[in-house]
Image (cartoon, rainbow, N blue to C red):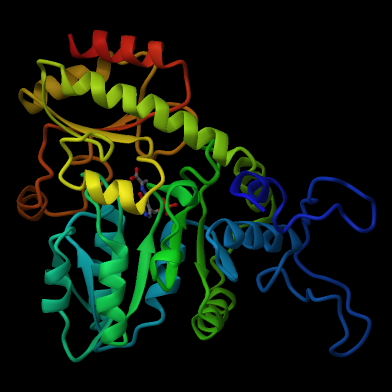
Length: 378
Ligand code: P1T
């Protein structure tokens, strides 16, 4: 089956007891068992729930993976991956990534003596140089949040596997519609389903997908042991959102290309970050690794932080808010919002300064988006 068909059907058969086309919301915490050890595959809803099972199977299929696991948030999915590590282990990550990911590495995992080295996102050689005897995992985000840099997944995975390391790719910004990291050699794919996967800004969730049966068993054990699972209604809403993922992603991208092109010509814009622009340093890699450039556009405003504050207050169609990937357009100020947990010196050394704005381009009529940008930047 092709992607758009899988998005609608994978993991979802009409309900055997009623014929209901849509997977029911199994709003139950437990399941009757016939006798000791005799049940229909479900015992307790932390361990498993049929609505969640459908979501896990659907996402696994979209990522060309065998096994999917759903969590209560993207961060809960991240913590599940981190549970594969033990005290004394080391990992490597890129120097541009979601602020909450940096925070869990630096303020949670470091207390368990798990250390992280950060390397220039796009420099394949730096990943290899950062490997230590106790390195266990390489954690990539591509495109990165918020600077939209790219990492060559295949090249980093080759290095990692030569050294027996696992590679996890946070695929939130791209969505499986434009990029499937397992096909490029990644061991685990992660999503904040809060974003494009659900697509309607009404659920917080996360998923992991892997083809590695041993890794899957460890992650599944942790999912049940720690219990940060999505409720059945959230799983159902996410499944409902996924059905339109293909059409949404096409429109997000079409609109984002127009916005990136518009900003690139604007006198108040110093620099535009969008992998679809020929001027983007990773444009060739983007063409090779992704089947589209996505719906996120960041730009450097020419002016002071006070001017940026004036600009964000002027938008009418764009909402000034954290998050991304919904049908509606959002504008975010990473330095004070999504990446506020990264100390200023580190943030600025990584190129994330106070005049950076990040746009999540929705699927509204693009003429309205361009007009809103035009009046806000004027
Ligand atoms: O918010 P949550 O569902 O827990 O997902 C965390 C997360 C993980 N990975 C990436 C790449 C993310 O962007 C996020 C969350 N990001 C935002 C809220 C944001 O506005 O960037």
